[in-house]
Every structure is written in structure tokens, then in C-alpha cells.
Image (cartoon, rainbow, N blue to C red; front, top):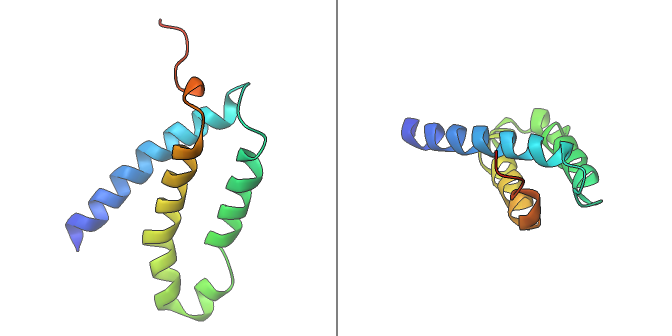
Length: 84
């Protein structure tokens, strides 16, 4: 279990950095900001507090996987910037 949590944390950390870059990029898709806001609202949904086990599954598994999926949907030209 500890190894799984470490893998999810490492994946989430790199994905969050990449998402932060994509949000600040001038050519980001128009759907990115609303999708991220909806995912954040989903992460703090009331059923996370009403049913603790379901909230744990959301926070640990589903939300990081959805962030990763959002990054996979981004166009590749966002991540290929000028060479420094």
C-alpha cells in the first residue's frame, strides 16, 4: 500500500507541474481551465465527507488519474517550446 501511495504521489507531483505550465501557456485549449475547475470541485464534493471510504478512493485514485488524463488530451505543441 505504501508503495502504491508513493507512486501516485510521484505521478501527481509531476502531473501538477505539467498542468501548471499548461495553464500558463498562451496557446492552451479553451476547455482546460473549466475542466480543471470541475475536477477540483469534484475533489472537494460533499460526498467525500459523507462517505469517508468513497472520499478516500476519490482523493487517492480517481482525481490523480483524471489529472493525468487531462494532460494526455493536451496538444503536443504546448510542451514543445523553444530550445533554451
